[in-house]
Figure 1: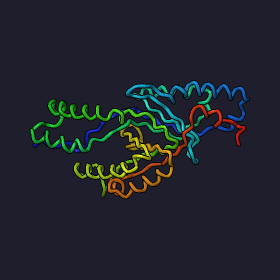
Figure 2: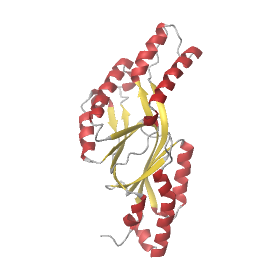
Figure 3: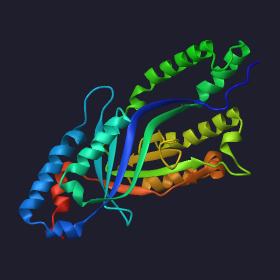
Figure 4: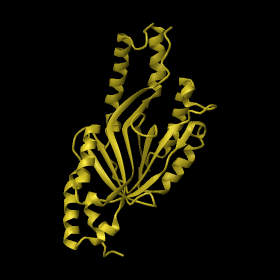
Length: 278
């Protein structure tokens, strides 16, 4: 039988950009009040339509979060149909007067991703048993049929609106590729089982947290980005703690820096920037 590919099928959705900034409060204080008001009005005129987003099956939307800790002051999250659109958003924000007070501390580029381990484990052996050579015309056609069906069924997860929750936790992660433990050399069936068990933990938290996974291999420094949205920040700790006990995380998971923010509606940006507030 033909050799089965070692990688699972995946679905790609919205392009996603996280921007983390430190705000230059010293420079902001040097502006006269009328100049500050103009900068806030210009920023609001740009950001309010982005916050509302576009209607339809592929909402393009942005959200602002007040970041906690020393890693920055503000975090912008943008969901768009393409990386080109993200580039335009980045440039539009940088061109504003408000943007001149934003000092980048970090950013992350990725694409919403859904892994099809279960479909891959079922489909690959069937095609191999039928003698269909991987990446032949027949193979590509049959695989595309699986991908198209899955994409239609999961469209709302591939192109999500930004959840209207108060808190966000974002972090990047890798799978280990070490000398002794290597995710990418583990058999497909084993990886599929581990990811299924990993997902069962997340489903128990489905009522309190919304999780969006994005792929970043070839796009940024880590392999995936994880966004957790919730009205209860404590759920971030509980969910991630419990997940670290499952095999996929305990043996193979590597985690980057964590970024936590509180939702900052654009209508409240002026209050956040006010120098008069205690």
